[in-house]
Length: 87
Length: 362
Image 1 (tube, rainbow over the protein chains, first blue to last red):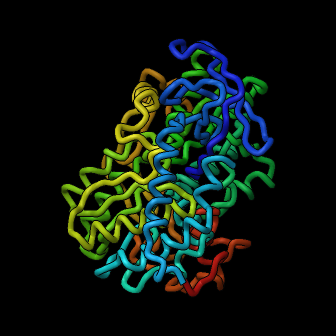
Image 2 (tube, each protein chain N blue to C red; image 1 turned 90 degrees about the vertical axis):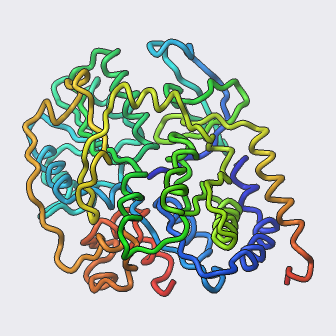
Image 3 (cartoon, chains in turn blue, brown; image 1 turned 180 degrees about the vertical axis):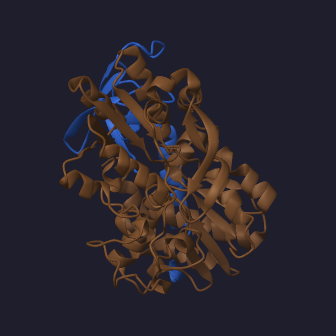
């Protein structure tokens, strides 16, 4: 139920400070394009940013630096595994 | 898909599997509390590579599974009322109440619509002004902010034929209730990823500090899951118990303040019934009186009947991590996905459904 996936923002509408404005972004992933709500997102996204979508709402704007650091730490952990343990 | 595929990379996973073997230095039981985690662990085959001494148990994190039979009966009774259209997330459709389900009610003529988002339910209300459109709020912290935003949108758009029946639940209170049960011995918790996107990794700190429970917030791809299990094993091995976040691309330590503010505007904590766990104080959310015109319980005369659990069904014990589906006499005999008796077999994220799909021997 709490499934959520990252999608790329291609268009942003509305005013972050005005809940009455239509706070909507167009997002896409793997060729699927969709309009989602920005009412509850933590940081207002810009075009090109990735946001995490759950049930039609963006719940988190993904910080690229965090994601890159995350994957590079995992790579580091993987690469530091001694060769003899890799069978 | 960016930010997904790289975490599924097998060149990354293989060394992490080996690292996990080395990280387990003493026996440990880990609970994965989120239904999406349960499915992701099975899908990735991680149960087949668990090191000796590491045990995984599923917890009460599938919202459909923990919905009380009494609430299910009330949902069905509402759907049967004239002039009412009930909107739900798809998981709920086939869940049995005491005698029937929303699916059966729908086949008898009740209006039951499956929606992707609560906003779609609001649009249905706008298009059908002669009906009362009820959204059945069945979910955890991840889902609540969107429902709150939808109620606010209903107010702003002056849509008066839209209401929410909230059985929204909070994740930390049942965990604390479970930890107080001496029958359940767990050493670590794989904290739910997207619940934590909202409430923050820091929300799990009381569990680590007061209950000495190793806590790791993890994502849902292969590398995320492996890294989470490695850190849980290391924490338990070193006895340095704390909260760690290995899903920083989706979870901040302090959570999503904007979403929490939205939830607080619309909802307040209340005591809530959980299937299998009973009534847990302040573990649910109800709509504040300021927004009572959007509260189904205020608008309709809703009777919460005393419901009976199906005889022999062990969903309650399974949800508490005390039993596995294999121990249930109904599992894969009378209770199957095609003809489910308990909710853990209905929901695609239910523990019984996962055991049925991916192998009962695991």
